[in-house]
Amino acid sequence: MSNVLNKEAFILPEGVIYLDGNSLGPMPKSVPARVAQVMNEEWAQMLIGGWNKAGWMAMPMDIGDSVGRLIGAPKGSVVMGDTLSIKVYQALAAGVKMRPERRVILSDTGNFPSDLYMAEGLVGLLEQGYELRTVAPEEVAGAIGDDIAVVMLTEVDYRTGRMHDMKAITKLAHAAGAVMVWDLAHSAGAIPVDLAGSNCEFAVGCTYKYLNGGPGAPAFIYVRPDLADSAEPALSGWLGHANPFDFDLNYTPAKGVERMRCGTPPVLQLAALQEAMKVWEGVEMADLRTASIALQEQFIAEVERDVPELTLASPRDASLRGSQVSFRFEQGYAAMQAVIDRGVIGDFRAPDIMRFGFTPLYVDSADVSAAVAIIKDVMSNALWDNDAYKVRSRVT
Ligand SMILES: *Cc1c(COP(=O)(O)O)cnc(C)c1O
Image 1 (cartoon, helix red, strand yellow):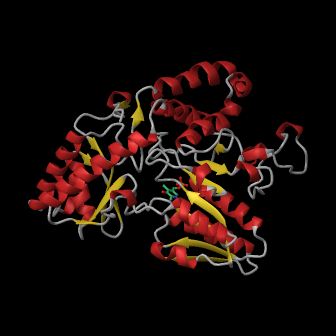
Image 2: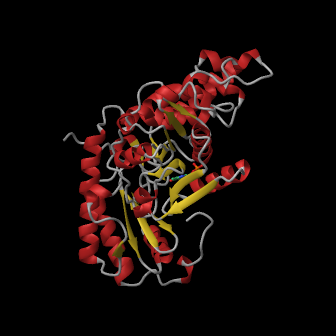
Image 3: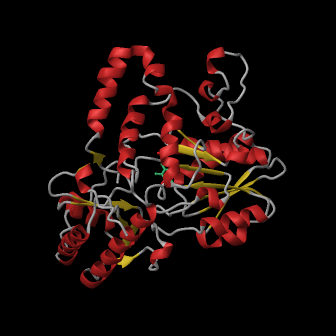
């Protein structure tokens, strides 16, 4: 295994152990200079000419290829833009259109709420008997029947890290004649993904988590290449048009996945992301996975040895977990605030989950031990039992 640790590539504040790269990745050191360059040399000097001269208009596809490499998608099959919630909507809408005789979108109760909300919104708009059906994650396989138009799942559960078997479930969906949509929010940059091998029709994900694109970084959508010229884009914006600068009054979708573009790309955010993607050059996802599992196993063993107050909420079998470990504790919110106050940053997910992300590009074994020592101090001395830690912030 080659070593994937590359701490020098990131800015990490002094005294911080960052176990929250699954919510917002830290900033790669070279990002500010690149964004400043786009502002000073491109926007300021080229003005509108930047769209052509600086290649701004090509960024959504160019960066799509770098993301595609990490998730096993062929060149030209991934495009960047909008937010993940929007990309979920696009994939679902296109999927439902591919099965006009069916009326059910199947998902699970472990899915991230926004994915379910977007499905609800779509179903409400379509009417005509459309339905969002959610079952427990372990019941998904049994719930895939011939009334299902689209199966929409997030591969790695945001709360517990539990993983769905992407290939097996896609196979079941296809056997039942359903379209498969995977959300890779907690997979891209976290675990090896073989999109092409899974044969799913659509995949979506975000880039501010494990891909370190920064707050508000654009999302991505993958359309299986054989469908990319026929999938119907529900959000038919001008930049997904075949010839946006013809200013036709009627919409004709572009060839390929570019039809999933909507409007003007966020150039400054794309520049930050493009620069951040450089840290992945030469990183093999299989090596990253090995390192991630080693950190997670160490963390679980040390927490269970030293912190009896916490109960493992993630699958114990590493092969069934993404790149995070969660523990339950009734006063989890206050406990996480106390831990953060002492320099170990993780996050809290209602009702009682303390979640820790493991990102081997900038977290090592010494960090894990140091983090556990702080968690132990907070728990064994009940340092969380302090009113200051019990006031919920807007973002947890
Ligand atoms: C993080 C996350 C989102 C967030 O969506 P945005 O539109 O980027 O805010 C959606 N779905 C899943 C599964 C996520 O993990």
